[in-house]
Amino acid sequence: MTALADRLGTRHPLIQAPMAGVQGSALALAVSGAGGLGSLPCAMLGADALRAELGALKASGLPYNVNYFSHTPPVPDAAREAAWRAALAPYYDELGLDIAAIPAGPGRAPFTAEAADLLAEFAPPVVSFHFGLPAPDLLARVKAWGAFVLSSATTVREALWLQEHGADAIIAQGWEAGGHRGHFLSDDLTEQPGTFALLPQIVAAVRLPVIAAGGIADAAGVRAAMALGAAGVQVGTAYLCADEATTSPLHRAALQSEAARHTAVTNCFTGRPARGIVNRLMREQGPISPNAPTFPLATAAVAPLRAAAEKLGRSDFTSMWSGQNASQCRSAPAAQITAALAKGLS
Image (cartoon, rainbow, N blue to C red):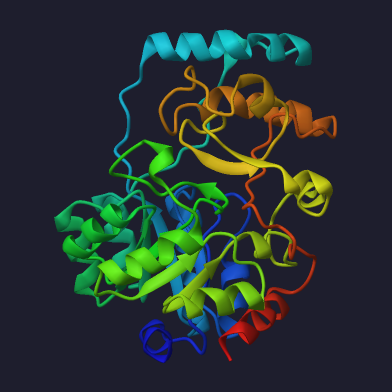
């Protein structure tokens, strides 16, 4: 426990999960200031916005983590895109939208040479990846400035692969976790166990520190993960209603209601399996739709529906990411949430 915190430069081996679309550097700074490791999701940020966020993080003098996706950009499939638009057409008609005018959706950029160039200006102390690791030459550039590299594994096989290919620590992402699944060796979701089944198996299989993630929302969960051999924990959902998060009012309301008790893994919002609170789109088109274009191409056609429905106060087409345990998702300063979680480390 102490060894991982020392390497992260934190008081506690506690990481705030990077959550694209619902946070910026403010949440990361609040967590780091409270003794944990705050994280900045970078996949949806343009160069100017990313520079501003990284500048704020670096100027603080606090430890922080930046997170990137490591997916391979897909080749567009016209037939699949047409099938997806046909499936969504009734919703467009209902909301009075023109399906022929679908704009480019918000992208999820993978880690590239250009991203490495930008990051090198700031030399973040911790860099994490989702969906595996970037190409060896890019990973070498990250390690050249001394960054500690994390990546997610959803199976023991993925953990062993990460160890072999240069990760410094492994995030064991259990089935309970909210947001995008981190799998990269197999798309078979039945291979992915829950956190407290996956964690001890990865701990036994690898030499690296293992960080538990998924369903951990309070001190008792932290304590259980540490008892099973975790070197630290990563928590996301419990921070979604933090004062410093940018989570929308509709999403916050759902997280703090009975709706959050029913989550499912779906590909309807981005084209890649991710866990969120069940809503109309997931019920009627999925939760796993064979028509959804490959990640992240499904996003473009859903984005106008989301925007139009949210103006009406509806979350029918909103990706309300959440893990299976939103019981501690409350409105509070992130420092207070971090302190409550850290009690499980004593």
